[in-house]
Length: 230
Ligand SMILES: *Cc1c(COP(=O)(O)O)cnc(C)c1O
Image (cartoon, rainbow, N blue to C red; front, side):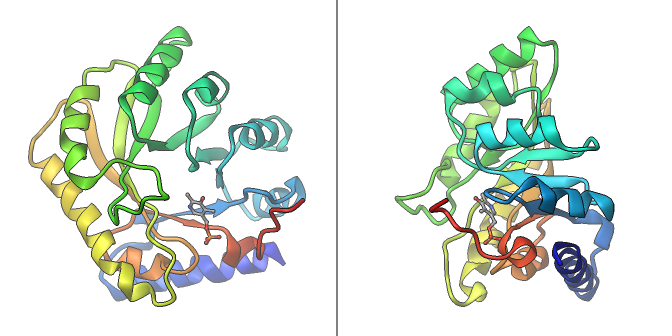
């Protein structure tokens, strides 16, 4: 069931890419497995899925230890500084870096383990009070600051768009994130890469692809609705 859902979403991702003149291989579909059992993840591993998204450090670490084959776990939820030490060597990509304090902690813990922490910078493009992330105009100075951190590698930007009925309403935010990445590229900063734009979820991933997403994070459409009360 979950495998069928995944295949159907993957097909729509590919079709959307082709329709707007992009290559399907440019777009990673991250299966957002937060709150969902390991069996669902295993069903997807069976069909070759390699990228999973988790919100909570504890849950990511737990699933990381238990999966039957190596896959990439993406830390997509807010990351507290005191949890960095648990996740720094388990998350393939941390999508939610949004403060100097967090970046410093990642640098410290990655250096200790002699690894490079692959990260994205989370941008609160829509400036929603309830969301984490830097405001658009804060991103360039932040990037310039953390470019010097030897054990952190910035791969691009991430945003969580507002929850809206009509995904077209989020197009402007995706466009802003893409433009911001182009502005940063034009500065030619050492150690800063803008290959990844992580944007688009169940409700709005097609619009995000049209605006340049290279990673879409889809949960509900693959795994069904989440139950947070358990
Ligand atoms: C839960 C979550 C998603 C997936 O949301 P769906 O609407 O279920 O596709 C994507 N990104 C982040 C950061 C999330 O927390």
